[in-house]
Image (cartoon, rainbow, N blue to C red; front, top):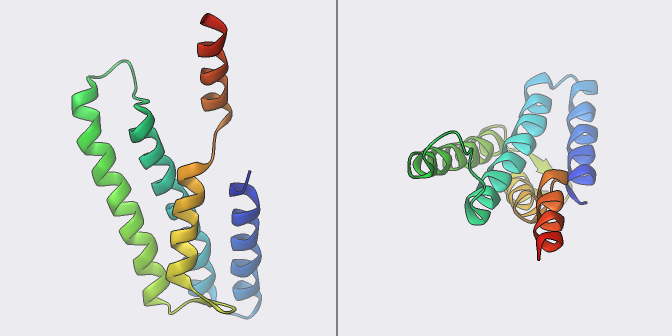
Length: 121
């Protein structure tokens, strides 16, 4: 439930940067927030062992770990490079908040899978 407000805050802050003429900073805020949420969601998928059934899970784990690390690194790098501060919060802290929100957010497919498992029992 927190992922939508987080991303709306990122869109507002990025849009404010666009309005002020700081195009690169606006893209950095929006892109880094999206990447941070994606990294958190990828790590959650790893913990819940939600893999594509068409492929071998042992081959998917390293790829998912590498992608999650790269998304997190890119998010932190964008916030650091553009020296983003969002009020009293450092931009890198804002990106880490996005990772935590992505880690604990539930998608509709996740909630449906849990309900199906409970119904089978």
